[in-house]
Image 1 (tube, rainbow, N blue to C red):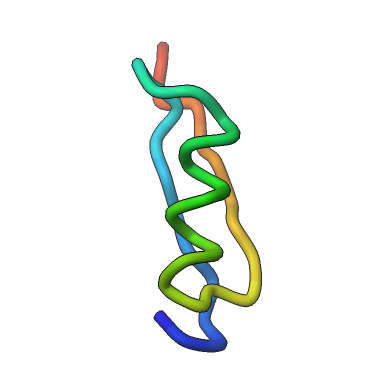
Image 2 (cartoon, rainbow, N blue to C red):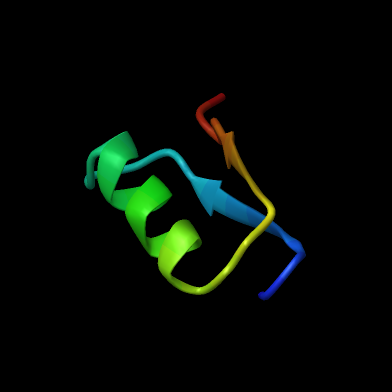
Length: 37
């Protein structure tokens, strides 16, 4: 994902965990989506 946008579903893990993972793989940005209806 180096330089790309990472997309993550809102869910069980913390936002900081999502951010840390996106940063670790080199994502340029992280977008967290809410898929609840």
